[in-house]
Image 1 (tube, rainbow, N blue to C red):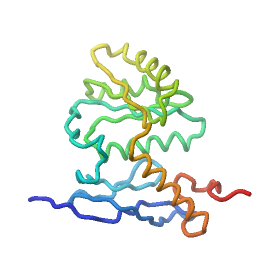
Image 2: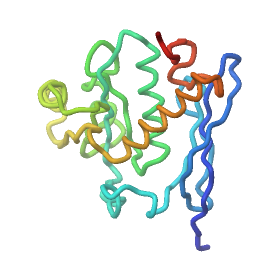
Image 3: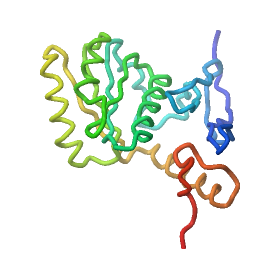
Image 4: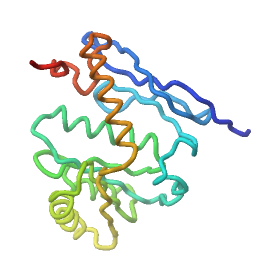
Length: 213
């Protein structure tokens, strides 16, 4: 059966103070038959499992869907925090990433301050059958952590799996979709400050999203 693109209004969930959910709208194009709500992680967040059509993809991703190997293992690395809520957010992102991409083996890792470490995540990927490892930094800019710390930790982790090659990808950086994310966050926070919507799941319970004077 052929699939035809359809335009929908995607409405991600945002938590409010009584653990119900309000909705906010963004626009996106989807292929019919691939829209499904799936729970992620331990935070109670839900995401849509969808495949955007080629017209909605950024230039950097067009034509590259098939570079993923069946036995590729992805390690998504953030800095790590003493704040457990921040660490759990990475786990939720990993679940979201796995649900919406072609990768079967995806593990979270924290560079420092929390577990799992890069070494532990590397081992978990190999245990699941990964024949090569993709270390993807959940960092914005190519600073010291990307240039020195993560390569050093990845190199150390690979010593126990010398037959498994690995690569460290670029950080998020100046990707064109970052503009959309920044704009979405800004508009939603302004709506919350004006009393129009509840706090988003990032700010929920913090009381930080308001104008200071």
